[in-house]
Amino acid sequence: MELRQLRYFLTVADELHFGRAAERLHITQPPLTVAVRRLEKELGVQLFDRTTRSVALTAAGQAFRDRVQLAVSDLDDAVSDVVDVAAGKSGKLRVGFVSSASYTTVPEAIRVFRQQRPRIDLVLNPLTSGEQIEQLLEGQLDLGLIRDPGNMPGLHLELLNTEDLVVVLPESHRLAALDEVRPQDLEGEPMVLFPYGRMPGFVARVLQLFEPLATPPVVAQQAIHQETVLGLVAAGLGISVLPESVQRFQMPGVTTRCMSGRPQTELHVARPFGQSSAVDDFIRCLRSTR
Image (tube, rainbow, N blue to C red; front, side):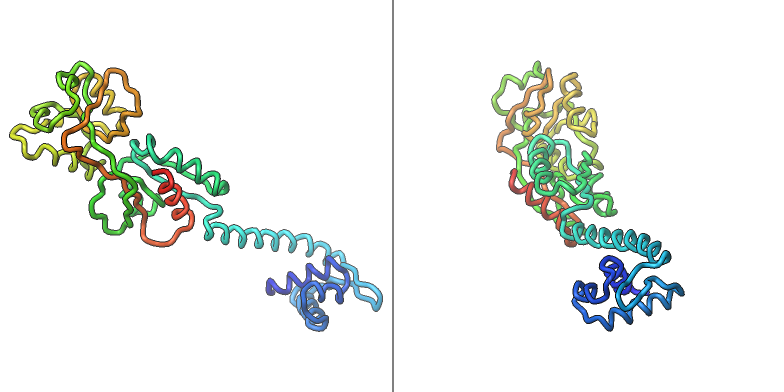
């Protein structure tokens, strides 16, 4: 039994006239008649009562039409859904992002993307860079926004934007009186930083700033989320170095200062290699907001 036979049957059942049905199907009447008779033979039942003047569905034909209409409609919907997913018009898009990106590019990109692709289920996951890299490589994320990734075999990277790094201090700290802080000003200071395994590129970038010092800052506390880092700094447990977008997050008891030399951190879009219209569309939205 072929799908073509079922469509022929449904058209005849709708028109109850082989000639009109053939016209709708853009075929001649003889092959349509042959196809319906072959279907009846395969089923072992008569689907139509035929006379020289009329065509009518039998009881079996009526029951068969009701079921076939549902099956063909479901199949048509499935085909349409697959085409829409391939075209990036529907489906699911799983996006990971570091917390600092939620202050800058992510909110506006989400707004624009939802306007352009309202039928796509956008699944947002605030994750560290290390977590995103792992999930991207395992196929659990479609797209990630990660900091200072370095070389990432297996992932395609695109630089989205750069930010200055700033020193985050308790408001009462002695260095809060300065307009600009030098790395040597932080010698021996306790520091609050992310665990290396969670933000490897960013942590390496920050520690690199203090390599020339005889007594670099000591990582006294670790925290996974940027907001937690700010809270620990406010509590006086140490200083930190974060992207300048942290200034958009108002944390009582904390102040920020520029660093001499304006060292920077990079935010990259990471994705597995391959084609995806939805991913491409979301990246375009990110580019438009940077």
